[in-house]
Structures are given as C-alpha cells and as structure tokens.
Length: 401
Image 1 (cartoon, rainbow, N blue to C red):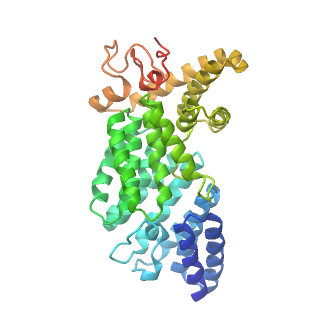
Image 2 (image 1 turned 180 degrees about the horizontal axis):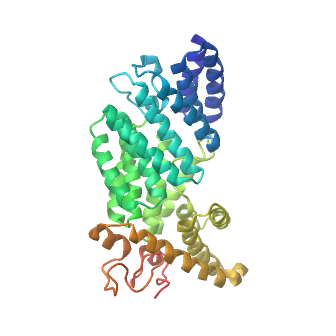
Image 3 (image 1 turned 90 degrees about the vertical axis):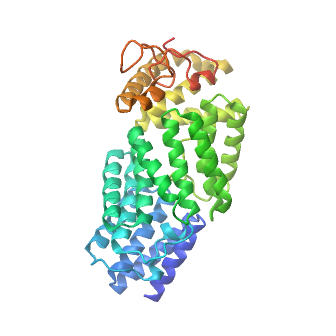
C-alpha cells in the first residue's frame, strides 16, 4: 500500500505542475500497485488520477474508460469518509482543500465530471451534458458545496458545447456566487472564465470583458499561473469581436507565450483559437494564415458548423486582403458559409426563451418583421440588419446586407 500511495502522491504532484508525461508514468505505477493491495478505494482513486493524467495529454478515449471504471468502483463502495491522504488531485492542485474529509460519493461526482469532459472532447456533447447533470444531482444530494461547484463548472462546458447558452448563463451565475463563498481562488477563477464564455456566447461583450478581467486579476493568487491562458484567450476573442485588434493582438501574443511554456500540447479546457489566429494575422504574423486553414480543415472533419463558418469568414477576409490565388475558390465556400451560419444562428436563437436575452443575442435592437427573427442575417449568424461586432471588426457589412 505504501508504494501505491507514494506513486499516487507523485502523480498528483506532477498534475499540480502540469507535467503530463511524468503524471502518467506515476499514475500507471500507482494503479499497478493498488490492484495488488485489493483495496477498492485506493484502486478507484488511482483510476481517477490516471484518467486525469490522460486528460492533460488529450487522450480522451482513455479518459472516458478510466473515469467510468473509477466511478463504477466508487459507487460500489459503502459510503464512508476517505482518509486525509486520499484527497483528490482535482481539489489538491486547485488550492485549498475542503475542511472536511471527502466521501466516496463526492469522489464519484468528480469522476463523473472528468467523464463529462471526456465525452465532450470526443465529440459526444449530449452524453457530456447527461453525465454532468447526474454529477450535479449527486452533489446536491450529499450537500457537498465543493463538488457542487465543480459540478456546475463541468455542466457549463457541456451546455456551451450543445448551444444551451441561456441555461449555461443561469447555472454559471449561480456557480460564481457559490464559488465566492469558498476559500479557493482557482475555483472562482474557473467559474469566472466560463461565465465570461457564456456571456460572450450571448454577445454580451461588455459584461463578458468585465468578468474575464476579474478572472485574469485572480491569476496572481493561483498555484498554477499558466491557467491565465484560459482568460487571455477569451479576452482575445472578446476584443476581436469588439473590433479592438490592438488589444486582441496583445492578448493573443500573451496567450501563445504562456502556452509555449506548458508541456501539454493542448489544454483540455482551453478556448478555441481561431480568434487568436486572426488577431496574430491582423498584427502581421503571417504564419497565422496556415493555422486558419488547418482550423477550417479540422472543423469540417469534426463537424463543427458554429466554428467553421466563423473560420471561413476570417479565412476569406485574409485571403482577399492578401490577393491570394486561393480566393478563386471562395465563392462556393462563401455560399456554404452563409448557409451554415444562417442555420446555426436560427437554432441558437430558437433555444433562448427569455425575451431580453434573445433580444441581445439574436439582434441588436433592429426593427424586424418576425417576432422570432428579423429579416436579415449578420456575419455572426444572427438575424440582423446592422453590422455585427464580428463584421465591424473587419470593416465589412453583414452578409445579408
């Protein structure tokens, strides 16, 4: 048992400093030794840590497999307090651990949260939403405020992936208020970044900027300073949408500089990067064009229409501006882009029940012929007769104009 515990602790330490390969090595050794002991709780704990280690390397099939196995094992164990040495890495690396001992049910919630992230990153967002809801229900059942906050965080990621922006905004606002009551700046930081993402998805750009600036201000108090990319990446997108390319470029450079210091190839809760790519282009970083082209190819392969049309808008603008021969192929792509963004925008608006939220997210105070959708479409995919922030940033009119 001592060797298993030692390897498990070393794995947690590696996770704490984002050393994915080292974490994976120690987590595998910990599980091997835990299985020899026959201790179910120790085995479940090592399974969870191994799944978390795989997440830092972006190996999502393994994440789902180990998180599911750990969750099943925890659910089968009679609920009892876990020793202090058994604190989960997800709480340990976040800063201050809770003042009470975690229960097996609480660890089951964390396993479900990791499982939800795995499903989302495997392109199975509906499964991620389902699992995240189960985790949130259990956290309410056991009245554990810490894991409830983490449950809200994971549910937000899932809801944003399936376009349920209104619910994501409501749930995350509650989560932020909850996080403010806990002595854990990292948890509040995460909550603020996802709240900013939800606000930004609803085109509430000023609110999103205020929220993200607050999250960025917390990074000085974080154990892992590189988390700041989760705020700076979103701030880059925020400023790009607002047309402030100077600040967008600055945030893009800051984000890229931090990522270059991280061992992991991809932060599993990182923001999509096409806004950064365009900001780098606007600032004269020509290699960003290749990144945009690669992003378009990946978005098409994975099947992400909401991201694809925005990438195509940026790519078209860059190719036209550079006089590239690739512009000859743009008319067909552009018609496809317009069709995709209209469908995406209409689905997005139809999911918002609140009149005030729909008004802000789907149009900007324009007269419209239909109570659900105005008569024309802007480049954000919203039905709109005015220029959107995304178009205004490029000096172009909405595609429906």
